[in-house]
Length: 278
Figure (cartoon, rainbow, N blue to C red):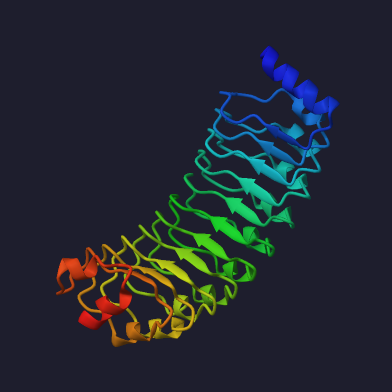
């Protein structure tokens, strides 16, 4: 441990500081002294080279935010589930191939970042986190979602971009608080009716999929949808129900097979003009 880091930990202990920022220090392991700082509420360990998280992490029982983005983590210790006050957990851009079901014990968790790992599936138990408001699982290798996703009734933001999803479960429609949904870069071939039944959806990104048809059910989103990205799909036409999206402020249909001048389609901030032409 460097002298600078030792002094920082001593100061944090002496002053009983609630925040400790050790991001970007090239750490390959964590000094045990960190786990003596039981008063910590915010711990930033992002942008290091950590491959494991010591069992001692469980001693930081007052932690509310733990940032481990951009490390080399392969697995998580079961003891992480003892952080009962944790509200924010960031694990993006690591090397995780699975997520322990023990995370479901973090009942106060509101924000969970798992993007940029190597996850092929998610444990059904994870969706017991009924207080989640934001969930990012982009750029993994997910092919399907558990039906238990319907339990996330408080979820407002969901990023599933860059996976291998072909369909969504019907239970998806029960995400009654969802406002932002990002599904770019999957292998979806049609617009799921479950998406069209989301009562508060404002932003929908379906770019870089394989959509050849846009369901007429999209009209169900007429009172909420403000932002719709459909660029780089296989659409040859759009249904007239798109004109019912009265709140729409942004529409991108570029990179499809539509018979329309590119200059019209590129005018993404004028959906009415685009729809009128089509």
